[in-house]
Image (cartoon, one colour):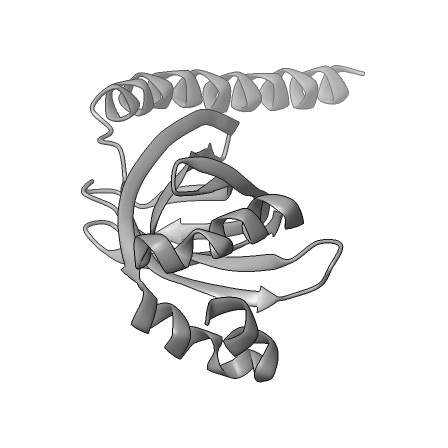
Length: 180
């Protein structure tokens, strides 16, 4: 009995020691998290993935830069795409991604579109000569404790008609018909 109690006491002491050292380590983690800078997000690419009458989809490629001196883990992102100021597509990625310290990575997010909204924007292309786009959403931060929160991003840009026509070449006659 005495040996069993000594073993149990020793095991309890070891577990308590690990727990206390873990709590001390949390102070350093809390300090790191309070100085964590937001990753910088920009558009690395936008392409048509699938044209269908019911639910066309686009592939939004995000460039994510980590300005921190430690790796940052992401648990995906949610993205909204607007064309000429009108929301037309949304999507969610649950693909994990590790941003290496002071490095950059890309993340692909498929967004499903509102067919009517996309067609309305394509019809306006002739008069506008291009498309203004906006991409907004959140990166989901993650660490070994679980979800840390969401980092918002929002940026705008434009694509001229010639670039859109070049991108639509892969769609064959449908792309030329839509963008003529």
